[in-house]
Length: 553
Ligand SMILES: Cc1cc2nc3c(=O)[nH]c(=O)nc-3n(C[C@H](O)[C@H](O)[C@H](O)COP(=O)(O)OP(=O)(O)OC[C@H]3O[C@@H](n4cnc5c(N)ncnc54)[C@H](O)[C@@H]3O)c2cc1C
Image (cartoon, rainbow, N blue to C red; front, side):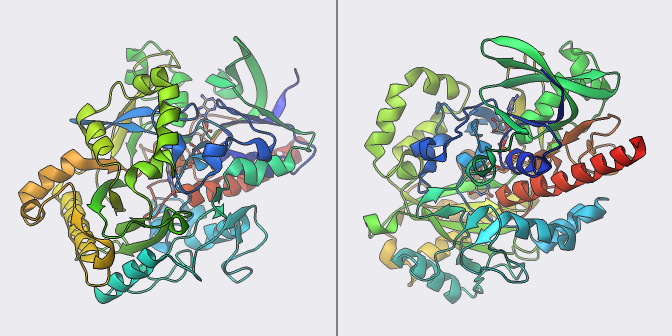
């Protein structure tokens, strides 16, 4: 087998756009490797993962879910889904397609990443989208691969009631959450059209399958990157029942915020004492690998509805959200409240919960394996409340940071993931404020036609800080937005893993392009930003290759 110009590990939110853009040059041989299933024919893509109104793939035991165990707090091990399929996590996610804000990128820039100012990243967000509401404007485009749609003309009755409640509480309307304006309440942009989730495999890879220089290798698990001294020269993979080495000139890790740092460590790049402890030869000591990742803690707060939404109010599970700023905060939009249109169970298992349960019963082994390490108490509580309607309350700027620690040199053994959620009063106080605001919305005159009572929390708990703290720590969930586990920054930043072009510090021919490199999770969902990163790093790699060719001429 010949040597590839570019090998990309992971066909997810960032990896798929990266492979599509790099293979635009027919002179470059591109290999895109994906551990999960490949679906070259979009019409034959798994039906349960196309249906955007629920998140079947997020259920533990689903064959396209890596299903990690993450310790949200030391006492709360939780099942954390990630996509293992063409499209990666974009094939499983909630389709909330939202850009980071100017303040988010000011932070990235301030950390020494001048190539990531809001002005510099905006053209890449625009390049990625086909905005079905706004079309071509200064800040939107109708030419990109990812369709983006907000329900503005005919919002559901509950959406209108939510808007009215937010208005009465003094919040402002944010018509376009991708316009970089003041945070407020408004329609959620979704990368879903007519209820179909358009993942990055469908948007970027399948339309380009006819390119002879683009090879996609599904069901191919990368065990590690291999090096000649400090130069990456290929990858060791498992496929078709065997292990082999595939050579490439430039290797890009796009395996996501857990697997990218894990793969770096398996390949000998990471904190040397942790690699020594599990018997991995150190190729390069980079203490920041897996350290201090950021995410959004969230709470799924259940309530019994007065009025159950009808079948015509279930296409978009997530139609509206409020982004707002906590009292006295210097970080605009650090809180979020999302109104879900489906009950908790149906959000995961589908409109017909019996079909969803039937699917789970079909795979009891995988399901049991996936929930093995997690908190059974919380899992059962959630199962008991699957008929509840819910709002999802998110802390979008937090001080807590997580760590990913390698526990074995066996690439199939998952690393340990510790989130350190809500360990300080800064984060707790904001979460309390978000909870109390959500209750004000639900119990408002405008919303009360849809609200009967809260199901998991009482007033005495809500009104008492200590009691509420305890409740929060036992009812926590994660938004699954892990970012910054191999973060970018200048070489004099001891925690930086890659430079601002995505090149791993101290190494040659090795890049990272995915949510791991975010200096910090944006204050809104990271999926659109992951795609933007794939688009932007593709241009950096193209530029780098051009310079290299000029030097060699
Ligand atoms: C259930 C769920 C709901 C979410 N909802 C939203 C939302 O509504 N809005 C939002 O903004 N964000 C959401 N997110 C988060 C968002 O989808 C992710 O942050 C984003 O998709 C991550 O992109 P990525 O490119 O970093 O990684 P991924 O998209 O996860 O891609 C990584 C890819 O690498 C592959 N891979 C990993 N290891 C290997 C290996 N060893 N060998 C070969 N291939 C490998 C994986 O199989 C995967 O395909 C959600 C996430 C989940 C899981």
